[in-house]
Length: 260
Image (cartoon, rainbow, N blue to C red; front, side, top):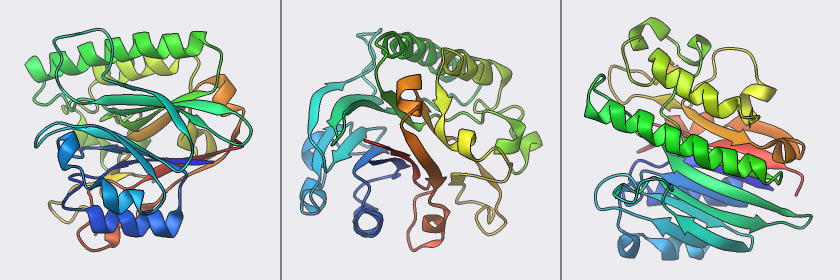
């Protein structure tokens, strides 16, 4: 079972690019971020025609997450617990049923947090604290589960081509990285880094200043797995080539293969 995360940066603008990749790569499950569409406006038919069930948690013009699954998908929940006043569409989860077992798949779009300091950064850190609570709950179940998405976190210096240029950015501030490590240290395994410890791998290249052409990227899209899920991992990778295609997202898919 291949599970991928992909910040699509506007589903309507990139539906053709998305469906072309789905046909080519054929992942069984995909979590999307930044669909930037209300649920009723999501172009689900083009994806359903490829054999996917589509579950969305949308928001007009901003944010928005989705799960696409070729496999049975049960118990879909929308929204990160812990703050009933939070109306930003950034979290969706459901249980995917494979041939050998099930995995709880959580798709997330973590707040950017800039400018920092400020209210947007306060929201980022508060959101991460709520996520840690949910992550601890997943860990306590002692079952296969993963949290995949755009974390808007550069975990380490080697996850940026030019780390010094990010020192004052909310994605790389010490408090942000500490909050990420608090989640990771609950016992999660980060899929890609566990397979590829070397530097030079990125999942995002800005549209500005020729970042893609100069490979001035950062790695901010991650898949964190419970121990029971990590035991099932057979491989993980980044679909870098998609960034060089026509009308690309500024992110590319990151995936993990599970023996399910």
